[in-house]
Length: 279
Image (cartoon, rainbow, N blue to C red; front, side, top):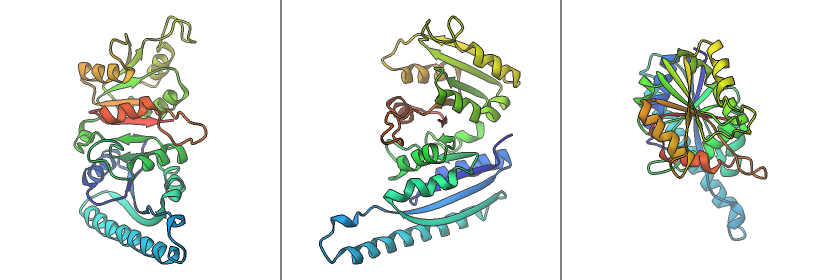
C-alpha cells in the first residue's frame, strides 16, 4: 500500500493504545514508524512576579525535559520488542511552539496516528497535536476511537463523508491506498443541493474517479433525518457495518487557522470507528 512513513506524537505516559495502534499500522503497511516524544511546558513567563521568571522558567523547562526523557525511555523499551522499522526522538517546547515543532515532522509523514483529541481519556495536548499535524504539517491524521485493535480490521468497509468540499476531496486522495484495498466503499451524501455542481448525480464524479482506480465504490444519498449531519453519518456507518470513516477536516477561522470546525469536533467526540481526516 501507499503509507511508508507513519508518525505518532506522544505527550504523556499512558498513551499505550495509541502506540499499539501505530505499531499495528506500521506492521500492516510494512512502513517505518516515527515516534515523537514531546515534553510540553505550559507556563507563560509573563505571568510571574518580577525577578522570578528566569528561575521558574528554567524549572518548568527542566520538568518538561525530564518528562520527555522518561517518555522516550518507556517507548524505546516498548518498541524494542517489535519486529518493525522504527525511530524515536524527544524534544521540549512551550505551548506556543508546539505547532511548528510537530508540523515540521508531520509534513514528511504519509499519515499520522493519534488518539481521540476530545472526551474522557484524551491526552492534555491531544487537540493541539492533531491540529498541528493537519494544519501545519498538511498530513492526514487517523484518529482512533480508543480501541487499538480497531486498526487490525480497519479498512475492509469504508464510509466516505462527501459534500464536494476541497477538504473532503483532500481526505479522499490521502485515503486512496486504503480505499483501493477495501472490499467495499460507500460514498455517503447527506441532503445534497440540487443546485450544486454535481446536480442530479451527487457523488457520481467521485465514484467514477475511484472506480477508475479500482475502488469498489457505490453511492448512498441520505436524508438529514437527525439534528446533525454527523449523527446521520454515524448511524449510516453502523447500519452498513463500516469499520472506518473518511472525511475532511474543517477550520472555521482564517484568523486562527488551527481551529477544528464544529462538524469535525462533533464527529471526533462521538465516532466509534477510526476516522481518517485531512484538509
